[in-house]
Structures are given as structure tokens and as C-alpha cells.
Image 1 (cartoon, rainbow, N blue to C red):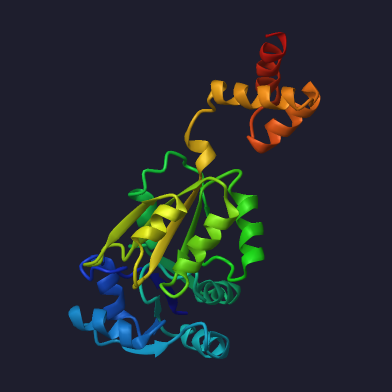
Image 2 (image 1 turned 120 degrees about the vertical axis):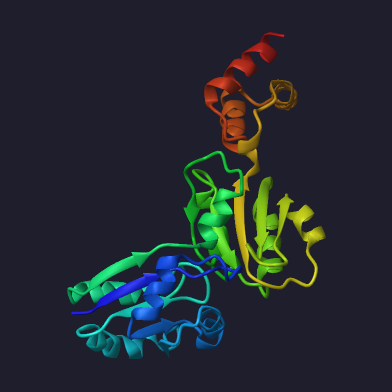
Length: 271
């Protein structure tokens, strides 16, 4: 029985490949590649002459049975265009089917746009949600973003063709948020954009390359200002709202504890 090797490859800089990855790619019978044209550049650099077979979103359903047959007697390596297979590509389906057939699966770890972006983002939280490529439709994006952002930052991939539209959607969905946008991580034209959606859009022109976007709830990045809250409470008192209504309204809109709002309300009421 052969072994299926899941091999991580560079996400930009061709030097970012492990000794073990080169060794495995040299010794397996076949390399499954998302795009053989792109993979040939990497293999040529390291003098790897192993046979390449295309395996991607368009053909993976047709090829899995044949691949499983080959794995009964030979070793195969799976690589993607860049990074670690199985993250936002059909690699996970092959792994699942191989496991069902009792085929040994070995990871050959290495570069990943996801872990690279996290490592240089400065995120304070050790909790985040990765959603791959976000939904294309606005309503689905809104539902996904609003549900997740309450508990953690959201990390996603996006293509140059859709990145502007994605940021405009985020600007429309959120009253207050922050973005860290990485372009072409580890490549010659690597760059990072940080700010709110409007600020990011001003820096964007003629998008090219691949993007990793980290979306953070802006309200989580600063402590509530009691003076500002008190002024808002005064406004509602003048409008004739009851204490109960003020507490309910502001605790929801500001996403703050009711107790905090109520204590501020009592001070303003007595005053």
C-alpha cells in the first residue's frame, strides 16, 4: 500500500520549502498538482522530474477513483499552487477518501498564507475564525460576518477581482471595524494595509495578486468612554425615555453590560 503525502509548498518565495518536501517530491511516483504550469516552476528550480498530474476543483471528482487505485501500490504527493493543501481547495476530499480506504496519509508541513498572516498581524487574541473565501452574495456575507464577529476576528482569502467589492461590503455592513489586509505575502511586492474600510479603499488601486484579510470588530479595540455614554443617557432622559428603555437600548447598541449603563443612568437621573 502506498502513502499519500500532503506537501506544503512556498506561497511566494521559492526558497521557502523544506528539505523534507524536496526529498518527498523527488521520491514519490506521482505529484498531484492544482496547476501543473505553476508547479513546474518550483520543480524545475529544485531539479525534480517526478511526473505531474492535474488535480483541482474542476476535475477532482473524476480523478479520485484512479488516484486511489494508484495509491494501492505507489506513493503520491499532493501539492497546491501555493501553501498547504486542504485549505480552501479540493485536497480535503482526497484525504477523506484515502482515509476511508485505509491509505496512510502523511503531512509534510510548511508555508501557509493563513498562519503567515496571523504571525505578523499582531492579533492579541488566540481565537479567530477562518472562513476561506467569503460568500460572493452580499446578504450571505452580511449574515456570516455579523454572526462570527461577535466572538472572534475573521480571517479570509480573496482574489484581486473581488477584493474591492469585499471591502465595500464590509464598510456597508459594519458601523465600526478594522481591517488588516495582506497582499502577496513573501513575494517581491508584499504589502500590508491597515485601517477602517474607507482608509483601506483609498490605498487600493489596480488590485493584483492574492489577498489575506483580517476583519476585527472596532468596538473591541477601545474601552467605552463613560463621559460619552453619560451624554447619550442625558439625551435619552430629555427625550422622556424610561430608565429601563435607556438601559435596554444602549446595552444592545453599544454591546455593553446592562449594569454599567444602569449605574451611569442613576448618576445622571439623580443629577
